Image (cartoon, rainbow, N blue to C red; front, side, top):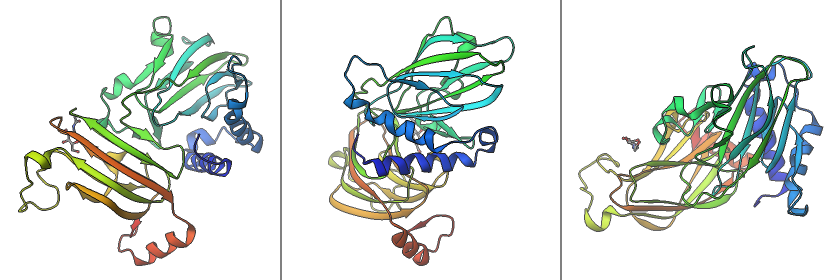
Length: 321
Ligand SMILES: *[C@@H]1O[C@H](CO)[C@@H](O)[C@H](O)[C@H]1NC(C)=O
């Protein structure tokens, strides 16, 4: 894990504060400091021998960044619970049902979602995900005996659950297998670097950083320039089948975010931008005819930088500079 504890704590705090908007879930839940520390402790698992399986209780509102075994036990009826899972960019989430004792007929459920949902907005957006929306929800009660294991398409997944009866419980084992071709990603930390490559595939990939950040694009290479020079008469990137866009916004869904910059020219050497939004996305659109590649670095904006770009910006809902 790249980040420091401070960053991880900040990440958890931020996610929890985002969740606060989700009153439906927060009404029933109080995250305690003990809860936060147990998540941080989970990151210490590297110091534990390989054969040891990390395990802890799952809370009704939870954030899980570790591999291990997670058990939810209802101490009272819990009608809207959500656990967020996150892994490294080059991993996916594998959720396995170990034991499930819930009352499906009585209205209980456990649903794995392939991505994250916050305030009704999804990541990856429907435009960037290979599966239709309905197929991204796997309900244990519909498929439990058939599908004991559900694997996400990217480094984030969620589990929604409802358990009416006191004492009902279930246990999930979470693993994080390597994804050789990561496409859609949510960054675990507010600083880092990433190189996104789409090798001749007709698909779009989004890299989301849920912080206000400065982005430095170090290199952009779109295969088409070698063969098809762009017609300069076109405004912006209109007409380019392959391009990169920087998006800013305050929700999760890239397709609902505000375009900050379109890039469809190859270059080397840094092009940088500060984006004062809660969520910043680097999205690559690929026609499938070329190998496209973008390399970038990002770091958290401090309070003063945020203030400065806010003053200089004409936009009011998200400011850029
Ligand atoms: C990728 O995104 C572009 C524009 O945002 C869209 O026109 C295209 O259909 C998308 N491609 C795929 C494979 O979804």
